[in-house]
Amino acid sequence: MSLPTLIESDRRHLIHPVASYRTHEKRGVTVLERGNGAWLYDAEGNELLDAFAGLWCVNTGYGQESIVKIASEQMAKLPYATGYFHFGSEPAIELAQRLVDLSPRSLQHVYFSLGGSDAVDSAVRFITHYYNAIGRPGKKHCIALERGYHGSSSIGSGLTAIASFHRNFDVPLPTQHHIPSPYAYRSETPDDAQAIIARSVQALEDKVMQLGAKNVAAFFCEPVQGSGGVIVPPRGWLKAMRDACRRLDILFVADEVITAFGRTGPMFACETEDVEPDLMTIAKGLTAGYAPMGAVLISDAVYQGIADGSRQGEAIGHGQTYSAHPVSAAIGLEVLRLYTEGGLLANGQAQAPKFAAGLDSLLDHPLVGDSRHVGLLGAVELVANKTTRARFDSSLQLADRIFEAAYRNKIIFRAFGDNILGFAPALCYTASEVEAMVARVRKTLDDVLESADVRRALND
Ligand SMILES: Cc1ncc(COP(=O)(O)O)c(C=O)c1O
Image (tube, protein in one colour):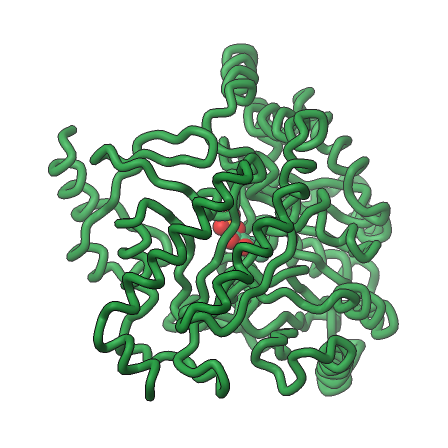
């Protein structure tokens, strides 16, 4: 198809995730054609620096030949094997073993999903099943964080706390609750880590008390909140929340869909604080976006509770045709090899200080109020007034304008609705690519600042 035909066909038929359908119809699609390393090429021949690893997933970068080879070999050998009827495939079994070996000690069992949303949904189903099976059916309420993102499944979208995922979708459910996130920049005590941690723990305790511990099943959180604006909690926060869950007798679920696989430095963000969750959801970097796959990792206690709860021979009715898909699993194994033996995790760790310094260097820009980062995950937050931290009026549509200006400067990153710019470069980034990223972001901010209405908003 020619490019104009593609654009017209897309406009008529293809529904895009998390978009205003009317805006998309007017704007039209941007067709991406190929990728190599940290670089993307669109159908008009533009070469773009991808500073968001696709959608925080292509951690290996594009064009990794060894992944392509292994995927095509697996496709030729066995493109599909069901996990039903007690069947399985070698790559899926090996990947489950590798994940158990690499992840926190508490996690011993793996259920493979197709992505993050259904990993979260599987977690919710397993937790529900577990408490019913062990004779504590009252434990139905779940608590998550404001600004959290846990996907867009029917149930998981209610754990998510982003307005557009709730509006007209009839969530959150009455059993889904949110407590404030550890958002240092917007807290009363931005520099007091202990106070931020104490407030989160207190909020969780208060919510559990209010609902009654016997009615609360679990607390879900991202170790670093991604889609809510890259909210990096103070060191010690994750451990404190984990410990609180133990005291409160509720399950602790770490949603590491973004933070796993080197994104924050180590293989899993939980490692940084030696946190052992009861369940952990992963996706994205698991296959680095080369094929769809996610997983929920489960503690032995939860697994045994479910297993023993089913009467002799009765099936646990949770499954998907493509659970433990052998091609995705083979890709996952090769991606894990690239992270470890291939040196990608080490490269990501080596680039992190430069990435951090680069984002911090933007703090002198008139539009930038905050810079936050961990590993190769970061954000800068734009504000109308650096002293009061006042946000820009939404009528300016600053985020859209920044995204378009960034594209003209040949860089892609995430421009969130509330003017937080998110960055998640691939772990294969070189030092000069980090420099190019920062330079292009600064140029983008300068370009946007040339508009009189933006300058006026700043002076307000
Ligand atoms: C923390 C978290 N959980 C779940 C999801 C949902 O994953 P998916 O988009 O693969 O369904 C995402 C996606 O960004 C995520 O960031």
